[in-house]
Image (tube, rainbow, N blue to C red; front, side, top):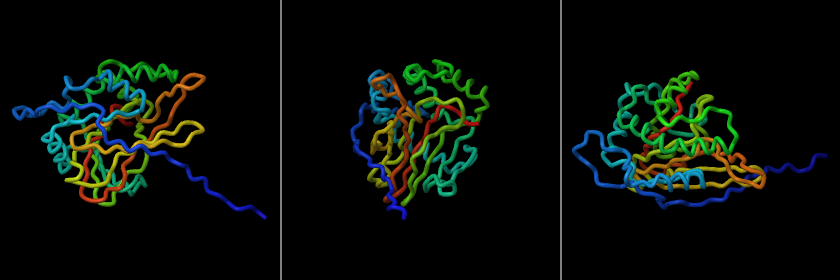
Length: 269
């Protein structure tokens, strides 16, 4: 006679994170057709990289102006800007939908991609060294990195707009599109919490070998950005560095609509 069967339910430790670690907020320049997406003089990138290195993510407030957020949200209705539309439920990704931009990218999306990449490339190379990666070093310029992607057959753009309604959510996942992978990506929050939607917290889960998962729950406001690890990060142990696996997702939307912009630096096959 067989004994009773038990399901092992993984315990998860939660840390609710509301605080903006760094702020990029400044005055809007209404005379500019495309507002400066990153207020460089407001961000201490050395500290931001240090926090990202230590925790696997960093929250930066006020990266986009309200005007920029509204402009990007309006792109969703223009199908000519996109190469594909994905319904999450169809692929068991969750519930909601998103669209991948086509080339040429909108100016503000391209500017975000090309201006943030060189700020993160130094840490990306440090992580590669710690994990003894055999992949080529990440170049200083984003244009050179994109050339690497295209030589590897990854030629389809990956920046995307995501749209969630009441009851929608996004399962924990990783955004990998080929052999060439930049270890960081960015989510920019285009809707205002409390006014446009409720719920829909941004969730990051880290799994270390032989340990319980650790989950960070982040509640950004309109214009804020979270920079985080795409799939794993190096953690120092007694015998050197090991890989901690990371996934991200979105909690259920309780009311309203929530829109976000995803900036993934590597292109897709």
